[in-house]
Length: 565
Image (cartoon, rainbow, N blue to C red; front, top):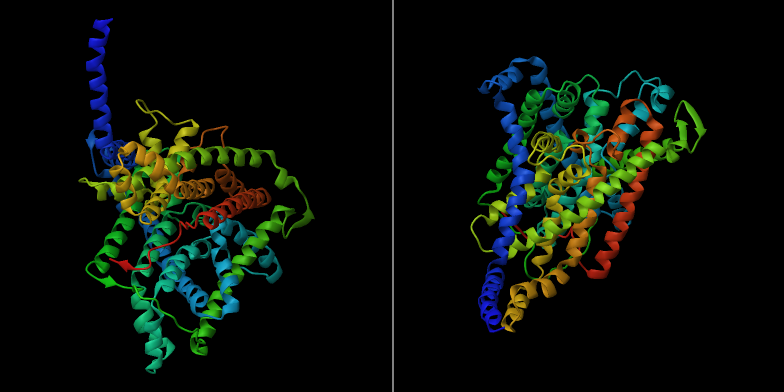
C-alpha cells in the first residue's frame, strides 16, 4: 500500500506539471493546431495546384505555361476574364454607389425599399440571373419572341449582365457602410459655404470613401472572375478562365493545363490585392470622430437625384424581374413556350435529394467552420506570438481566392493517400469550411473587439486558470459570433458551385451542381424550382440570424466606424 502511494506522488506531480503547462501555453498550442489545419486544408491544396502546373514526368518544366501563352485561345480567355472583371467592377461600384447614396442621403420614403431590393441578390445563388436571362432573352425567351429580338444573350454581354446583377450587393454593402460612418458635418460645412452637391460628392464624399470603394472593387473583381456558374451557363463559345478550367479538368482530364489556368486565375487577384494595399499605404481616412454629431437631412439637388434614381431604379427593376420570372418558371412547364401550371418541378425527386445532400454538407461545414473560426478569432485577437498576422492572412485568404482554384487543389491534394478524401462527403464539407472560414473569423474578431480584456484578467486575478476563464467567460460571450459564423457559412456553402463542382461524386449530387446541369441541358423549370427552394432556405437562415441579432445585440455585419489604413 505504501509502495503504491509512493509511486502515485510522482505521477500526480507529473500530471500537475502537464496541467500547469497546458494552462500557461494553451493559446500557443491552439495556434499551432489551427495553423496545422490551415496548412493542410488551405495552403497544401494551393501548393498542389502550383506544383502540378510546373511538374512533368521528366521533372520541373514551364512548357505548360509556354503552351498557354502561345495558344491564342487561352490568351483570349485571359483577356475576356480580365475585361469581365474590369467592366463588372466599374459597373457594380457605380450602381452600388448610387444605391448607397440614395439609401443614406436620399428621400426617407425610398431608403428602406431600395435597400431591400439592393440586398435581394444576397439571398439567391449568383446563377439565378443566368437562368432569368435565358427565360427572358434565350432563343425562345419571352422578350426574344415578343419583340422579335435577334440579339443573343449567350456570350460576353450576357455574362457581364448576369455577373453585374449578382455582385451589386457586395459593392453596395461596403460603400453604404462607409457612407453611414462619414461625419455629416463635413458635407454640411461645405454645403453652407456654397459648394454644390456634385462638388461635395467629388471632393469630399468620394475621397473619404476611398478605402470602402477600393475594398469593394477588390472583392467584386475577384468574385467576378472566379464565379463559375454564370460564365459557364451564358458564355456559349466565348472563352473564360473559370469555365475553361472546368472543361480541362472534367472534360479533358488535363490536370496540368487545368492547374496552369488556375494559377493564371490567381495572378490578377494577387496583383489587385497589392495594388489596393499600395494605394492606401500611409494614408489615413477618418470617417467619424469620437464626438457626437447631428445633422438634418437635406434635399438632394435634381442634378444628382435624377441620374442616381434612374440608375438605381433600373438596376432594382431588373433584379425584381429576374426573381419574378424564376419564381413563375418554377410552376410553369416551360415559361414563354408552354405556359401551363405544373408542380412537377417543385416536387422533382432528384432535385429534392440534391437539396437534402447540400443541407447535409452545409450543416457539417457550418459546424466545423464556426468552431475553427471562433478559435482562430480568439488566437488572432488575444494571442501574442510571432506569425499571428500570417495566420490571420491565411485564414482570410480562402474567401479571396477563386473557388475554382481551391476545388482543383482539393482534387489534386486529397485524391491519394495519406489523406484520401475524394468520393466522400467530408471533402465537400472541408472545402466549404476553409473556403468560407473568413466569415466565422471576422464574426469572432468583431465580437472580441467588443469584449474588454479586463474581464478575463479579473477572472485570472480571482484564481481561475486559463481553461476555466475561456470555458466559462469567453465562450458564452462569443456564442452569438459562433451562431453568426455557423449560419453565414451554411448560407454560403449551400449555394456554392465553383469549388464543389470538381468534387461531387456519382450518386451524391449537390443542389448547386443540379441547377448548373439542368440549366446547361435546357431544363429551365427544374433549374428555376431548385434555385427558388435554395432561396427559401437562405431566407429562413437570415430570419434566424436577424432574430439572434435582436436578442443579443450583436451584428456580424457591423463594421468599425473609423477606417485607418
